Image (cartoon, rainbow, N blue to C red; front, side):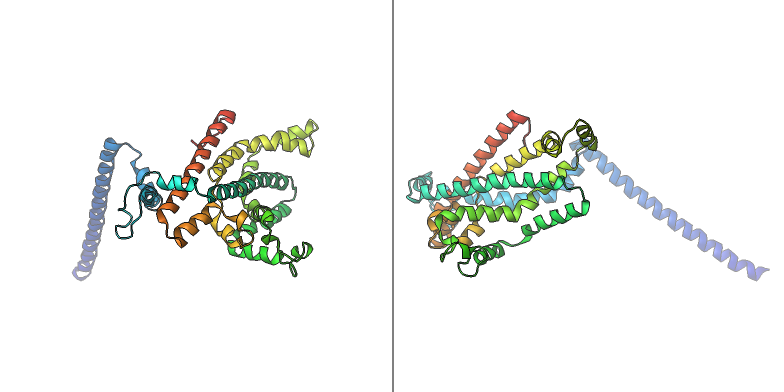
Length: 335
């Protein structure tokens, strides 16, 4: 009797000790939680209850500040003579010297006209075509066919610029190209008058499927009851597009137009530079490629910085103007 009671007593003691340890750890965890709760309540009282959102967004804000705003310090080169010995923080202040130099340069008119021509053609056509494509895809009844068409149209977006330009050269080759064989013995890229059409047509082909996705997302929010009511009233497909689809995506169209106007003079450097030849340089030299030749190849860093800043200020002006007009006309704006 005595021998069996001793092990039972030991088991009971171990169990009680385990319960005590669990209770102790639970009390410590509760104390820690209460400490954090008190700390959070004190911060809420000091700065408000939304400080947690600021903590979550801090890494993103730090990333943007580091890689978007800190480099803006280099814009001071546009107003100073760059001296390699003194670095980016040195140099003599010259004011608007380099801006005046660019405006009075013989290349100013040619570079600006080329940039505006290429940019406006690309902006207008790449803005209109995705809207029509989205409206057409939305009219496809079969879900499988709709997904197939959408996939085929946005796949070129993932082709690199180098490959796109290589395809253009192959297709327009005078002897072996699919298209070039019908236009004589000289490549169309060598014709200065054909550079702009080739640029914006290839750009639309590459990006129209991707750009129409946002309009398809807006069209997916249309209430099906509107379609049914319009069909009962005798509306056809074109009337459905005019009176139901287009009014639905008008706010999205306004926002996209404002965003595109912010890059009215921002012609892509890579594609233009790769498509340039000695024969089409008179119509293909734009601000971005001119900055590269002046700044990188010519070592005129202050001059090229001033040209780039001029381009940015013009884009910013058009962004503000487009936002103002859109806000007055349709009460749609980004700020």
